[in-house]
Image (cartoon, rainbow, N blue to C red; front, side, top):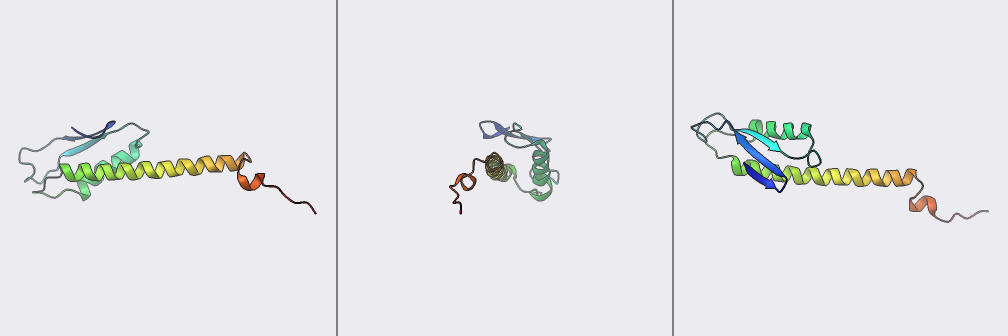
Length: 107
């Protein structure tokens, strides 16, 4: 188990006896709460590690950890931006945006 953040762990399972020289990658399992990354994205990331980031004779643990950290940070940033945009849209719908509250001149 490799701790990526206080609340995120990357487990490497089914490590073959001849790893890293063998042709079978370890099985990555990302443990993270839903608020950090949803299940669909976690599964996609685990699959990406095995299919796109594994080559026989290569120690992948550090590479995978750094990639997961980067993806989680990016995902969190995007989710934060999406949440901020949703908050702004909700404010606009409630009439709390500055443009709708500006003073209008009448003829």
